[in-house]
Image 1 (cartoon, rainbow, N blue to C red):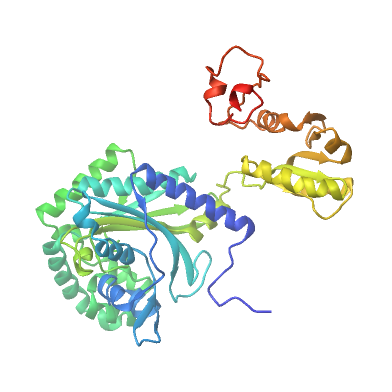
Image 2 (tube, helix red, strand yellow):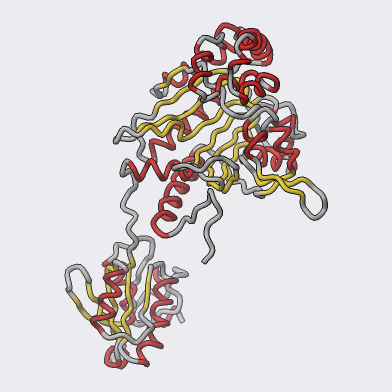
Amino acid sequence: MFNLVKGTHDVILDEAQKYTYIENVLQNTAQLFGYKEFRTPIIETSELFLRSVGDSSDIVRKEMYTFEDKGGRSITLRPEITAGIVRSMVNAKLFAMQDYPVKGYYTGPCFRYERPQQGRYRQFNQFGIECIGITSPHRDAEVISMGFDSLVFLGFENVTLKINTLGDDESRENYKKALRDYFGSHIENMCNDCKERYQLNVLRILDCKDPDDQEIVKNAPKISDFLSENAKQSFETIKKDLDFLNIPYEVDESLVRGLDYYSGVVFEFHYTSSKGKNYGAIGAGGHYGKLVSEIGGPEVEGCGYAMGIERLASVMSDDNLFEDLTDTTDIYVMPLGERATAASLGIANYLRVSGYNCEVCLEGKGMSQMFKKAERRNALYAIIVGDNELDNDEFVIKNLASQEQFKVSSDDLLKKLDELLNFEGRKHFECCDGDCDCDGDCDCAESEENKGCCCSHKE
């Protein structure tokens, strides 16, 4: 038996249903906001992430799966998807062909070599959106509201939105200088990661998780003291929009995010379950100013966020936020005998193409065994097919909850099932056997659905 690679996991059965449910809600929400789907490769040239994510980030320094392919090219399994989405937009020349902003959403696997823990895997699934071509802080606020709405649609309550701003270029450069001066007198007593971050990007030190270093970080200069007037106004606009949208938030000046391409507003959605379990950030994102041009596109800015599907599924299971995802089978077809088995294949296929979830027993079981199989599949109705039914061109339908059963002709089977299962969208016509005076001037004659009925004017 082969074991799973460390840090990976199989997503099957009930868990797979949960993932699909989450992805559908997130995708539907994105579509409500006018976003289009993007699907990009899971492998990219390593240079893409070195240029976009930044060599000071933990992702690039420690966590990327990078290898040399047979052509001698350095290839990386994507650790995040934003860079690939922007690359695809640049390659497709979308910034020249479409009105701004260009808006896309994505779902797919990412890979990071980090310590596996609950809700965190080395291969994990991520949903995210990118809105590029932003010229107003109102668009940043809309992106944040979209992420917040997505979590509400999934059933989350009391989500804590943490926001901060990294300011514009002028603000950040002044702030970095102040941080360098402050941490310069402490850096020898800080962790090795902080020492490396001090050289590469001093902002990263604010994100250190070492308890001793966090005490030093508490007294570090605050970004708010170094913001330009433009940066202050943009951040104030975003906060006013969030107030208007009734989205509660906390300003957290230690929030910098883990990717080097962020500038302007950054944000995280935090959640603690009803059982008191703190899951930390279950979604996060921010504004970026140079990412598109770094990847070869125009000088345009963007904003986006991402959410881990595993993390969402874990906390939703913990807090019983999933709707009833029990699998049900609409109809279970029960053939009695070889002749009926062959006919039941056709009946089941007819019902499937008519829109019904249908299973059929093809193993030659007895009635009691077939009823047990139907019960295990949570079937709603059974259709019993035997020689007598075939001879009389009729079927027995049984309600498996009430045990009520009745006969229906083969011509009326679909109509009866539509009534029983409240199927909408199919129009049924009563056949007049050609004995009418409409001369074809009626709804049933004009309907494409009803061509081929026994009315003489429909022949």
